[in-house]
Structure formats: C-alpha cells, structure tokens
Length: 520
Ligand code: TNX
Image (cartoon, rainbow, N blue to C red; front, side, top):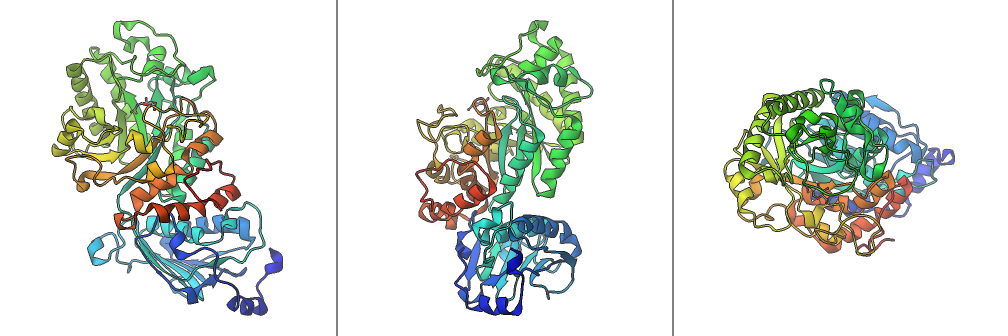
C-alpha cells in the first residue's frame, strides 16, 4: 500500500482511471434518494484527512478505524468548521434535522446527506447517528476489499453523486438469545458490528430462559451463580457481570445501537426457579433444564415474594440500561390460567413503568391493560390477530417479527444443518418479500414502530453459527426497516446483496451462500 503513496503523477492517473467498481445504487439498505454522477467519481488518496466538526468527532474516529486496515493510509482526523478537506464529515446544525419534518426535507434523527464529487466526500447530518449511518454508506461505496483486516493494493474509488437518506421506521433490530446458549461478550460485540453495518439500531438481548439466567442481579445473587451455570445440551453456560453488560451497552451506544434487555416472565423461568425454589409454585425445587421444550415453567403468581423479585430484577436491569426499553417477555406461559396471567402481567408492567422504562413484550401481553407507550412484539405467522389489533386500538405500538418471515432460527432449506422449521423454511427471498406497514390486519402503518429479526439459539452454539443464520437474511430485514417501500424490489435487492458476499468474506463473516442470490 505504501507504493500507492500519493504523488501528483498518481493523482493525474486517477483522472484517466476506470469508473468506480461499486455503483451509488448498490447500497444496502437502499437509500431514500440517489442521484448518481458518473463524471464525479472520487479516489481516496493516501494523504486524505478526515475533517470533522466537533460533535461528529467520534464518528470520524470510527470511520478512520474502518478504513485504515485495508487502505494502510494514516487517515488523520482533524477538526474543521469548513469544507476544504478531501474527505469531510460535517455534523451541521444548519442541516435540516430532527426538528424539521421529513416532508419539508428534514433529515430527521438518523438521516444524512452524502455528496461525492471529484474532489472529495462530504457527509452532512443533524445528529451523530445520522453521520454514523452516512459513514456506513461511504464504507459500502468503497471496493469490497475495504473489509480486509490487512492492507490491499486497490484503487479506493467512490462513485460520484448524491445520496439523501433517512429510515422508514425508527425501530430496526435483531434479537440474540444468550439464554439457550451463552455467548461471551466478544461475540455479542461482533453481532453489534453486524447490526451497525446495515443501519439496524436496536439489539434485543434475551437474557433469561429455562436453560440459563445471564445477567448478574446483586439483590438475588444465586440467579447468576446457579441460574447461569446451565445451557442447552449440558454445556457450562455463563453469565454477564454487570460490568460485562455495561461494556456491551457502551460498545453498542458508540455504534448508535440501543440495547433492549429482556427478562422473560412469568414463563421461561426454570433457571430462576432452580436458583430460588421459593419462587416456584408449591416451593418445589425443579431440576435444572438443558432440553429445548417450552411452556412448562412459571414463577408463582400467587406469592407476594414473586413481585418483590420482579421489582428488584427490573430495577437493577433498568439502572444498568440507558435505553428507554425494558422487555418483559410474556410468551408461552402455558401453565398459567388466562385471568391469572393477565393480572400478573398488569402488575409486572406497572413495576417496569415505575423504573421509568417503556414496556416491551411479546404479543401474548395483548389482553393485559395498556400502560403508557407499551410496545408489543408480534411473532405470529398469520396476519389476522384480532387480540393484537385490539391492543393497538387501546394504544400499543408494534414491533413486527413474523415467525415465518424473520425468525432467523428457521432453516433456510430442508438440508440446513442447524435451526428449526416450525414456522417454515426461510431463505432470503422469503425474509425480504413482505411489508411491515401492511402485514397485520387492522393495524395501521402509523402503529408500527419497526421490525426485528430474532435469533433463538437452541440449535445455535457458536459465533460462526450465529453469523450463518444472520447472513444473508439480516440485511433483508434491515432493508425492510430502513428503506422506503417505493424502493422495494426483489430483483434489485438480490443483485445488490450479491456484492456483499465478497465483503463478508473479506471480513471473515460466515454466511449461507443462498441460491436466491447471484453471488459473484
Ligand atoms: C418460540 S417466539 C419461542 C421461543 C423459542 C422459539 C423457537 C417466542 C416468543 N418464544 O421460546 O425459542 O419459539 O423458534
């Protein structure tokens, strides 16, 4: 790479160089607006400087971290208030922003504008999150080798033109089940990077289930010590210390990803009951569970001690979590009678609200009374769900996770070595071809907060297996969450997605080479 060091001769050569190998229209998720200008390709020179206004400093540092390994360029970051650099990131108060309505051309909380001309790249946003998303777009506009961890001799060309972009939905997420199998902090951080690459902005952590409890709670220490020591298949399990959890939250926050912690109640609680048999119905200590059945366990809704437990746990988790959400689970409490279940959920919702967090829960929460702002996560497979539609009429908003579209633990095909098939087989076309805005009968698009792709891990035990289930479906879900419906186009998407295979290969990401996609 040093041989590519910038000289006047080299710059002159660039003027005659072939067009950029990536096109402006190749970005995933598809931007809202694009105006290519083939006469304005830019080639990143070895002496490029990233100039940034002070509020965008950290985004510029991250952009430099992404671009240095493959280019071998020093890419110093310098403060600026003016646009004289070759690669300028501008966080501008003058950008039409959060206050401005999208209709008036505002970029909103997460939007950005990217201009590539023959002399440089400029990203403008009203927020650091917008600047971050713009920087991710810039990275995708560079050749696939930009994902290499070591220097590559390459012409670092960026296609000319302008992108103006902002998301369709404010909530775009993925869930990682760290309860069925435990994943160390480093694995979770890598998943955060994968989310950020495709402008997903929420990581839902399913922290508790029958097979393991994964977050240390100071007031109930046996949850971690005993509840954390099991997992599916009999492995050692594990548990995040509060410091570990804070590290995940901080790493995610730097990448504009909000962590949504889930404490699943009243069912899916066997690990907690092993740790504290006093919470079990009849106080009967259950044996530890390392199988994959669901629906058999629950905390005793008739004992006041259970509500003290819930208050303590959600209190500590809320205190560790800067984001606005706290997910209460609520799924598959098959052994709890409907009236008892509803009364339990209403008390639990109130306890969460008392922490200042907004309640999120699986759509089984629907029959319970509304609390301010509550969000239901719909994981059904049939878009006619009157109970959920009724909860929306009473004020709930929805996150859509249809099991037969975005459950990333479903197999791609019958011969997929891991995964389930209870909601069907899901390859990338099926994951892509639906509309979150119209999916549920009787639910208006305005009630849809966004989309989330859950990854349950009964059959997923390693980071490579996690990646295999995420890629290439995660970018499909990301596009549903980000891109305006007018850009929805399977033929175009599969072609754009194909160009990402070499990026994942360069980054060492395991993926399923789906036959739906014309890989190069
Ligand atoms: C249903 S979906 C579950 C999970 C399982 C998953 C397996 C939901 C809210 N609950 O407990 O892991 O199916 O696909």
